[in-house]
Structures are given as structure tokens and as C-alpha cells.
Length: 196
Image (tube, rainbow, N blue to C red; front, side):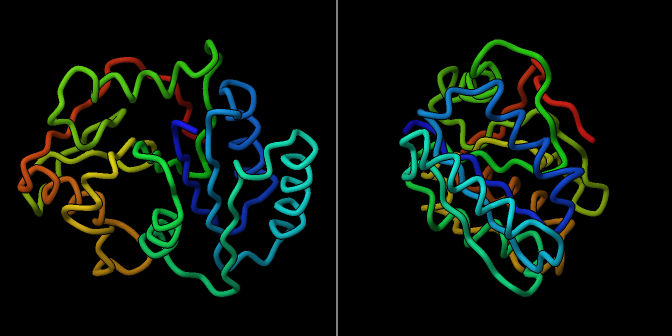
């Protein structure tokens, strides 16, 4: 497997998680993907859906390509991501929000678009679709709804900060720390996603 795709999820199974996962199936070579779903505090039908997803992977002979992390209590975005990152086995780890759906495209175009930045520069640590600007930090950052992070960044600076509660700010800090560690945060030109 070449890519790990990590989806943190908190409820919203039918309206967000299912369309998100189905778009990955539709526009990706799933034999080349390790899909990691970090479900936390879900009280809807997420548990049943993930059971059906496990069966789907099993029937395809791809049981090793799916990892499910289940926590009964809400963890918040950073912890849900961190526990997922810790089980990813590839060097190219995609953090992908459950409220994103891929646009119509050729197979793996979205992954190749993100990966291209690592091929352009060996200093690339984060490849993102959108950069924002943080007024409090006075610094640009990668918006973490769909980013590819190389494992070497996590190895050097650690996981996402837990200082921001349920979410909002950890992507800014991680981007800044990534650059301070000598890596580049590079923005892609092509857009292959559709936020819900």
C-alpha cells in the first residue's frame, strides 16, 4: 500500500461519512490505500456501517487495507487524528475530513495531485489543497480538511497539538512547526475535492 487515508468521524454517518467513503472507492485504487477510520463518540449508525464496511473489504480480499479505531466517547479532532496516525503504516498519510466528497476525476488523481508536491521538492513535509492565513499567528498554514503529510514530519515534530480542545488551531500550529523543522508546506493548484 502506498497511501494511508485517515478519516476522523463523529456521527453524521449517512449524510457525511458514507458519501465520503464512497467517493474514495469511486475515484481511487483501493488496493493501494490503507483506509483508517477513527470513530469517536458516535451515537448514530456509524458502528453498523463500519461493520458492513469491514465485510465489504473482506469480500474484496482486502481486509488488511481497512483499520477501524472505535472510541465510545468523543475525543476531539486532534486526538481522533493522532490515534489514527499512530496505526498508519505508509509514509504518505492523508488527513481527510468526513465532510469531503471527491469530484469526478480519473482514478487516484486526487492522491497524485497531493503527492506531486513531494516529487517537486524533497523538502516538502505537507501538501495541501488550501492555505489560509492565521491572524493570531500572523502566519500562513495548511487547512487540514484534506492534506498529505509525510511520516518524516510526524517523526520529527510529533503529532497534532492537544491544546485546542475539540478542534481549531492545531493545523495552524502543526504547519508552523513543520516549517520551523525545515520542511516546506506546499499548496496544490488542482482541486479534486468538494466540501459539503
